[in-house]
Length: 408
Image (cartoon, rainbow, N blue to C red):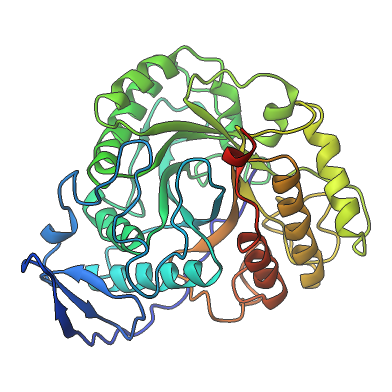
């Protein structure tokens, strides 16, 4: 489902205030705060990026859990770090990088997002980032100027891990080169030479898979919403190549229409769901009615519990008339936060009732200030700065739901 590539806000001024308050028992790291952040950071040298790309054992834990040993040990961290069987309560952060932004500012923004997610009671985050193609029939896929380089991404991964967040890395094909614009979508691409396309894709993803291994990333998404390619045999070779770099969970995120219409044929270890089910109800529909609309769609796949399903994307515009087209990122009707907040409550109810693995809300732009009121020009899909929706998220993430593991 197409959604917003959220526009950049003005770069916020950076004030770095570092104060050493305690030395570590090991003597090689020390605890300090920067940028007025409430999150303490373990690190030796702010001015070098080398310390941000530590070895594969840095975050400890096992390959199954891939959690940080620091997660619950200091203030400002996730209260209950994710473990297998627990729900993934998360947010999709979309990051279009810019060479004009310093490493220090990247770190500040990452820390701000981590603080915000912790305040929502999140235990997980998915970092989506763009890659590019030259058109719907192109065999080429490649990194562009706004694709974060692995060294830059390492900065963000370290901050997220130190906050105790379960991390997913998620490449997402940018749609700017796909035309005509109104119908362009990554799910409709038809590369002229699919073998060449998968070879280029494997070359692109390889360094990010290695980065994910080094930084103990819990899940690596090998593709999202690529409907037209889901039956291709090229996925097998891609997965084999990525497994040489990364030992964690390789997942694929299916669009809602293909997900309910039949089996998703990508042979990934897990299949996520980009869930934008249209529900034909008025703006004043109850949460129960919205949940019922969702369940009618999911029943086309299977009835009852769905413990293997995580909603990799869920969201809706905070505006009038959004329920029949929840993935509409371009329309800007009158703001109606009740529509968005009620949808979030309904989706959370469905996740709990069906004992799903969790949900990631779309979305938060890496460059936006999540504490600011949403500007008129940005997508109505944005939830940050909308108090009713934020309350719905906190209530959902702070619920007593123990996750699919409790039902097994």
